[in-house]
Image (cartoon, rainbow, N blue to C red; front, side):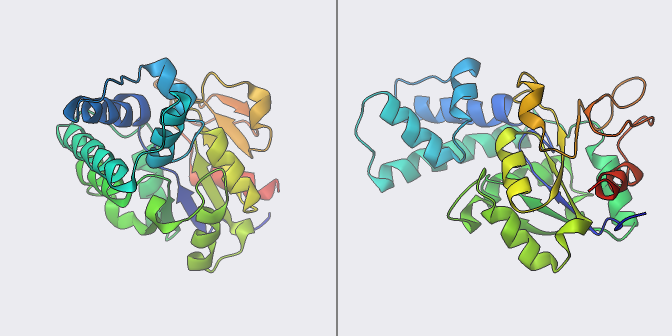
Length: 253
């Protein structure tokens, strides 16, 4: 038996909850309306834009695609503040939910004394809003957060995970990352970490070959019926992903 699991690092958007299309996208569209900007991001448009990590970066990329000059920083910050306000309100109204299997795995790891942290490109305010509404009993499970404000280079760059490793003071070989996207997978593996991909609304349509660097790829942490469907990696004959399964991922490294 190899190194036992010592830490879990959780992505947020698409991993803890399906926030991208029916959360952040809606926040952007409401912000566009608020300031009188004639933009509307449908799901197809937003899917393409998600190739760019970070809200400010996404806005800048879209404006460039429209052939328009960059905004002054003050204008960009005003728009982001409006988007964040609408997103936080949407979450507070109970319009999002934790993905199946997330709460049981966090609770299991917490009971086992395993260090857990968040590593995300989202802002600290967005993470706080999500946890306050969806996981108040779980928020104490996370020792620290690495958020978009904490890095100069966002996923797929590994900087966020490298910062987390600095705080963990653990061997990378004792850490598992939970991600949903190709950018997150690239960031985790570039930091030398084993990554379990739990496919989301964003990534479920991506070719399986794109995820070959993952230690495992599952449809969800906890299916509605039967055992966990594994697309890549060791079989899981349980009704949800557990610490035992995550340890298998480390043992295979």
